[in-house]
Length: 240
Image 1 (cartoon, rainbow, N blue to C red):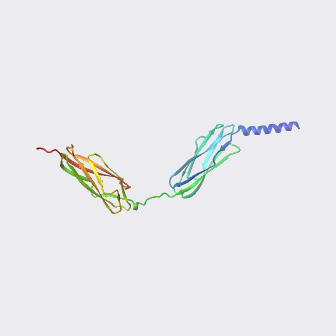
Image 2 (spheres, one colour; image 1 turned 120 degrees about the vertical axis):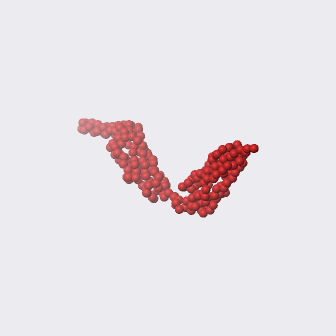
Image 3 (cartoon, helix red, strand yellow; image 1 turned 135 degrees about the horizontal axis):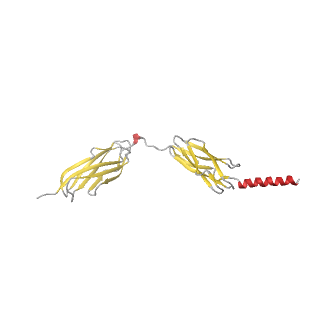
């Protein structure tokens, strides 16, 4: 009778020691809500697995429930007290509405051989502007040559342009390559089919010889967001 009791106590002690000394996979969070995401964008995050046991925890395998999801641990072997991130990347291309995906992690913990993580949210359609509704900036001329001019004079020219698109053209900025060039824009917003003007004045004071300067129009035209105009002149000093 005593022998049987002794064997039973040894069995209980061995079982408890195995549970304490063996690997133990624990998690803090099993689910992740990524909210609303535009279709085509990736969802990236991670889950954490910690070894709270007394032996080496092995991550034997990580797999996702869908080919649209890639999942991988940042380490495969966890010493007691160590943690590993289970990183995942969900490609939302071609997916719409509510989504629920799973990541499965297999370990050598005899009491937790498979951990099931879940992430979910809603894929919304990206707002796109139809090409037919885009603005188009079009200039009658993109260059002007003042020719031979008198040094010290200020010479003007007006460039004509039109919005040939179907959306409102917005001029965000006008940049000149030189402080000697001043510009005046007729309007920063040009409706479809409407015209606009850009008045340019070139100051030739203390400038002699052939010269060229540029004016860059920055707009919301998707095809030509930076339209460059060029002016030329050849200032000459007066001779008595």
